[in-house]
Amino acid sequence: MDRLFELGSEFWVAAAETLYMVAATLVIGGFFGLLLGVVLYSTRPGSLLSNRAVFNIVNVVINFFRPIPFIIFIAAVQPFARYVIGTGIGNDALIFSLSIASSFAIARIVEQNLVTVSPGVVEAAKAMGAGPLRILRTVVIPEALGPLILGYTFVLVAIVDMTAMAGFIGGGGLGNFALVYGYRQYEPAITWAALLIIVIFVQSLQFLGNWLARKVMRR
Amino acid sequence: MALVALRNVTKTYPAPEKGAPPVVAIDGVTLEVEPGDVYGIIGYSGAGKSTLVRLVNALEPATSGSIEVDGREITTMPERELRGIRLGIGMIFQQFNLFNSKTVWANIAYPLTVAGASKSEIAARVAELLEFVGLTDKAKNYPDQLSGGQKQRVGIARALATSPRLLLADEATSALDPETTQEVLALLKRVNREFGVTIIVITHEMDVIQSIATKVAVMDGGRVIEHGDVFDVFSNPQNPSSQRFVGTVVKGIPSRTELAVLRERHDGRIVTISFRDGDASQAAVFVALATAGVEFELVYGGINDIQGRAFGHLTLAIRGADAAVDAVLAEISSRVDVTEVS
Image (cartoon, rainbow over all chains, first blue to last red; front, side, top):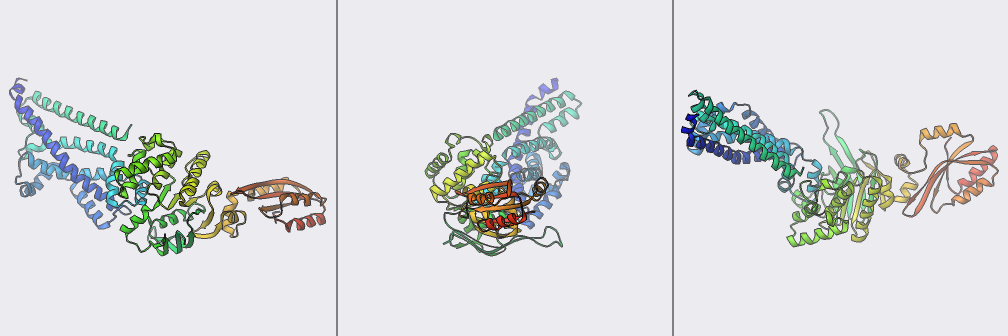
């Protein structure tokens, strides 16, 4: 316990790092995931911009990357990270690989939720003379917003989970803190302290997501 | 000039599986809808009614033939231009298809936004339409807080937002109870009378045709098998298929099983006499029967009213001496249609 107080400030820095990695991944991965998901939804046969070639390519790419265990994925995209953001190590390199991995997961969740939007509603918008991009933006996404928020919340929890691997490439965060100061130095109290913060963190995110989704769906 | 003119239009869908023949949904339809018409399209489900109406606003592209809307050929028009055409055609649906994430107000405003109307124009028009459909107090509500009838009224207001000349109603009352159906039909009638909007109504319900349509087309197997004035088509259908369909919706024609029961319960000859407005009056027929020295009994029947004109079918069991019965049947045959059913 004393050791935890000694490490006090470092502990909070680690917590802030986790927060930073999660937030950055949510913004970047969330954006590209939404984009890919919308592409999947709108290019599928019979949809607004149906295009078999695009659909098949995106579909195969996502299926190719999705099953790769994240810790191996980090290693695999490291050279690519070096090229794009100039470094292969640290928190930012983790955000880079995590954004890619999560955007594929989010794409699937977005696709799944968008296909539940009633085709009749899409047809109604079409009958009013709206173009496909307008329909996607002003009808399809708003109609699926509640379930989309729940889907994003689900992925967000997985993202928190994956930030724990930042230590693997020299990043920080609570996961790394728990491993370095708790596990390796035989201080279970520290491990549990980190764990507690992560649990509180995840719980609040889930609560926030549920609340937002309920507000959007008005029930 | 016709507002909508279809000429020899076909719509074929690719085969559902390899080796199967392609599906012919619309098979050479020619049809003209004049401005101001309330044109009913009836038929069993799967007859191609919904596909036909979707060809008119190009939600489905026609496979061949020509479709003119307001004098403009739409089958060869590029998608971007079609969007402009669709702005001038309202559409309402069986399942209403309202945007659940938007308020009643925003639902009605949507087509106006698409049309590029200004904020003040939108506000004024939406207020006007809410007033017209009697839902001013529901402007801030969401569709899931409304009853079926209210939802369809929002649907109608939304469809009319851009002041279209043509309204397509795809089974618009089929999900509503009879009372609400009448309310919505009354509203559609006002849309036609007050704004002069031409309406194409797809339905399988007799009530709908009876209360609002001025013309009707009967569809079967992707073809229009009969069309014309509603009264003529319903009181005296020519095509066997339309007779069959009309028989299921018109009151007074006994079905095959009902006939068998009637046959068992009543002696004598069973005949159905069909009256049409302007034909010999029912009274004359009954006088003839009463003075012929035969016994008769009314065993089945019904009178229908279409736009204030009545027609009906009455099934009678007639007993008496053969010669007397033959004589009276010959006499009434000269006044009304008589079908011997036994």
